[in-house]
Image (cartoon, rainbow, N blue to C red):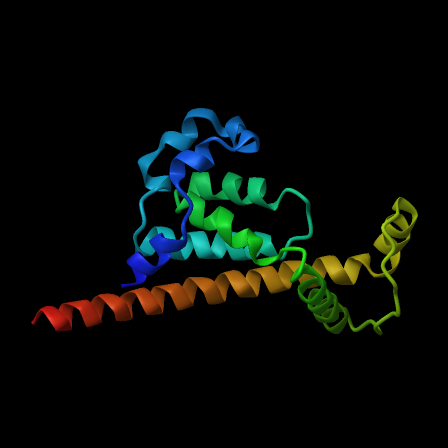
Length: 167
């Protein structure tokens, strides 16, 4: 059940192999384990994808692929999961990451208004940057751990249910 549900949402592996930014991995993309979906590859892909979804960089998909390949987890799933942070969800997710960072560092929250300029970016790296980056890494790690455990539990439950239905 879990496998069929996940496979329904996964993109075709031939389309992923055609992504220009992923061509730097060359022949590594032809490893069959990157495209196979089982409990191990799914839970690992959830961990990788969810972690990099919280990291505020413009090349999240590339980072997710770079980590999924050596760990031999499902590549399409790990790449697809970074899109949890999309233009609609980024503001609340990244603001929550900032709040987590301020809580961990014990710093007071600072008022800030986003401006799409290099000046604002360079100024904010010294003011809100440390709390935001720390909060992003912590939230990413927690989301990765929760994703790993949740997929493992749901997958095992699904297999148990299928085996009991066969009896």
